[in-house]
Amino acid sequence: MKTPLLPLLAACALYFALCCAPSGVVAEPVYKCTEGGRTTYADRPCATGRAVELPPPAAGIRPEGAETVATRDARTLLELEKLRITREREQERGERADARRARAAATQRKTCARLALRRKWAEDDAARTHGRAQAAAERRLTRAREALAVECQG
Image 1: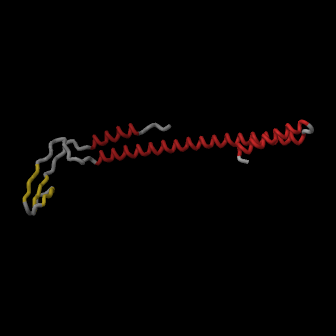
Image 2: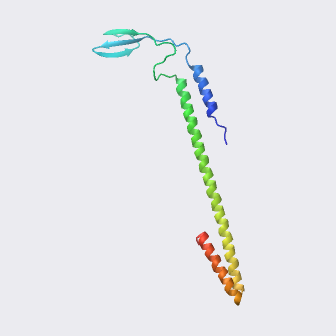
Image 3: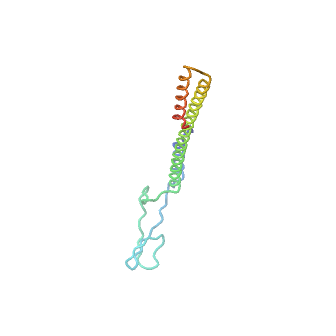
């Protein structure tokens, strides 16, 4: 079985995200513009209408949904690793099922070969015997044929 890479990948992704995340973020001013009753936000002062410069967010607080590229990449890598592991497990499960079916088929072939050999021996015995032993040999032959028909479908 392969070594699970998920914990190692998660640690690497977290390390990458923390190293690449900006530590001293300089906030750019955001301008709130109201024009004709419609409010918009921009990174430049309004050309017309009224502009209000919004204060920068407190240190360490990010707007909801804002995440660094490294964090998104790390999350994507984790999801891909989970999908790979799931796919490998399903493939292994399928291979085990195939192996079980192959073993069952081999056992069935062996059983059929054994029953066919018993039928052949019973036919030989029935052909060589005479008198009272002939009836017993015929009975054994009939039973061998029936067992072969039941187990091997013909």
